[in-house]
Image (tube, rainbow, N blue to C red):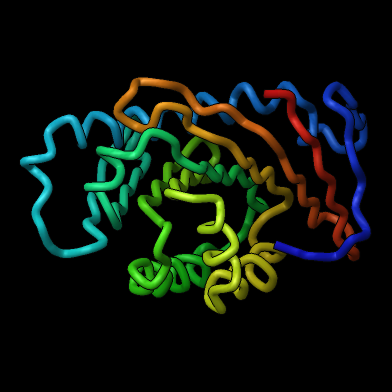
Length: 211
């Protein structure tokens, strides 16, 4: 995502009427989607014997109601089973009505091929939601994993070049999973970044969340 220091800092309850996608109430809906993906991953790992030793990442395709798609890519399922705290990234984007997803899908496939080059990356879930939009849940074993993932040339290309052509706006959440995946705990969001691509120049903001 953009690294410019020219951004807006939002308070916990600040509301911007001209940018409703930044409303803090949106976090509750986003969390429902993220928790749903987390639950599916937890359900799969509750039967670790069904997950083969190879390949890595191990990729499953699930079909949700209405034919919506759900993909789960597990790079290190063994660590998902044992770690007692995970770092969470949640991506929630709203696309342009006539956006072409093919370029993003092509880069996404290339990103899967480099998963094992990212030492802290554990899993990556993608869920299609209403309106053909997508929600992504990425779990890391350490916060350093986010930085390592961000400097991937393919990830940077998708974030900086393709996202503005496909998405109207994006909410990017950072958080924690206290107790780890198998504890049954819930995601705690710590920060949300907002990116608005609707104008000629990028607008973005950061909201720190109380934990």
